[in-house]
Every structure is written in structure tokens, then in C-alpha cells.
Length: 293
Ligand code: SAM
Image (cartoon, rainbow, N blue to C red; front, side, top):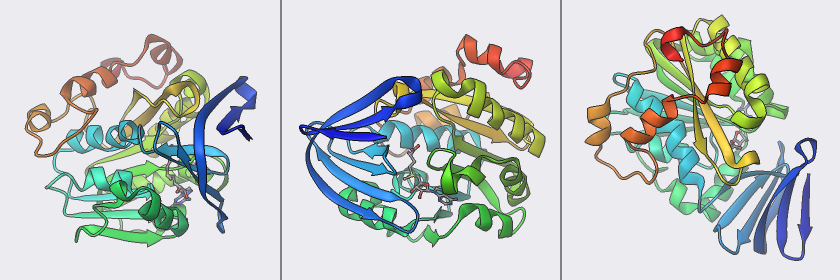
């Protein structure tokens, strides 16, 4: 639910009894796409704001936190990621971070709603600056169907950068989807999914992701919390699943020698994000193996 009051955009989380507001200067764009209502605002202090079906997706000012944490921990945990697939991620911020890795030979963005990408090109051009990279490929269609049909054993890293698990994104948080992902990933493959708020969703969405990833055959599952000021509670997470290798280890020397700039991610942040809060360890007790706790 949203409210617009005297120059403020407010997203109301009715069931939590909370809300988040940004002071806005202008509405830059509004349309009903075939999939969702897409709005873009110019804010006073957070740059541009994208909203899908009333839910804040990103702002110019703080999207680096989310995009860096959705990509670099997984890319530096995989031994040698060459082919990366992003499902969702239509704003292209995740794609931009993936393509910073020189070892990536091919990256796909599989986004259901082409209008999100077209409006991101217009209002978030800095996120789309790698779109012309020869390694970048775009497919506009349903990621659930795409994953069902993709060549088995062909992907190193799958990043699920989706909206909340309702509407078209519901199927991206499902056991069948993880089973298809398992088939599509090569040995050593990793899946990483945006997994909502640790405070609000550990007992529900995050627990279900752990259970379903394990049921699908991912032997190690790890949730990494990180700050995200514009999302409900200001605290978000991604959850990685690995086909075979423990997720506690990453290529730390390569992180320290990375040939590109990050604003949030570094080796210390990676170590810190692997340390799950005690209440999450307790809630995920059945799912978390001793060496991962
Ligand atoms: N950072 C955001 C968040 O956590 O709220 C997500 C940003 S990104 C804009 C999410 C994208 O997922 C949207 O553009 C949406 O169209 C896309 N999406 C939702 N369901 C999808 C599906 N089944 N296949 C492909 N893309 C999907």
C-alpha cells in the first residue's frame, strides 16, 4: 500500500504496522505494464526512486548495497564463474556488478518485464552502463519457464534478483524452480537469491528457502544479511546455495586484488555477512549444519 502526502512517497507495511517515506520532488513516470504498475519519482535526497506495484525497488543513492551483495559474495565464492544468469534484475544493476568480473565470459539477464529495463535505461543510466558489453545478453520472458528449458549443466552462477514472492515472482521461490536450477547448474555451481528481511522473514520465507534448496539437492545453504535502508526494516538478505562446495570459504586474495571499485563490498564485509545472527541460527537450526553455523 502506498500514500502520497504533501510531497512524501510512503510505502505502508500494514501487517507490520510500519511505513517508509521519501520526500519527493516529482513523479517522473507512471505506467501499467502487462505485468505490474511501474512508477519513477525524483526524490529530494535519494536520487530517483523506482516503485513496482507500490513496493520500493531501488533508489539511486542506496542500490549499491543490494547490488554488490547480490553478486560479489557469490562470484568470489565460486571457483571460476564463467557463465552467469540473472533472473529478474530488470534495472540492470546486478548485471553491471557481474560484468565487473573479468573472468565472466557470458552473462544473461532474464527479466519478465522489458519496461523495467527500458525505464531503468532512462532514469538509472548509471546502472545500465554495462548493457553494451559484448558479454551481456538479454531475454525478456518468464524466468520460471526459461529455467525449465535451459540446457542442463550449462550455468556456473544463478542470481535470482526478483520482486517479493507474490505474482510472477512466486514461482522463483519454489522447490520446482530450485530443482530446475540444480539441473541447469554445472558442478561447483551456486545459486543466490534475494531473501527478504531477516527480522521479518527468517521464520517464513528464509526458512522455506533453506528447506527447499536442501530438498532440491543444494548441499550447503547460507544466508548473508546486509543493510538496505529503503526496504522494510532497513535490513535485507541474500541466500546462497551450493551444489557441492562449502560456502564459508571465498577467494579472499582475489577480493583484495579485485580490479574494480566497490563501495560496500570487501573481504571484511564478506566475513561479517557470513556470521549469521544468533536468532537466525536458532530459527534455522534444522537447516544449518554445524560447520555453517
Ligand atoms: N531489488 C529488488 C527487490 O528486492 O525488491 C528487485 C529488483 S528487480 C527490479 C526485480 C525484477 O524481477 C522486476 O523487474 C520483475 O519484473 C522481475 N520478475 C518478477 N518475476 C519474474 C519472473 N517470473 N521472471 C523474470 N523476472 C521476474
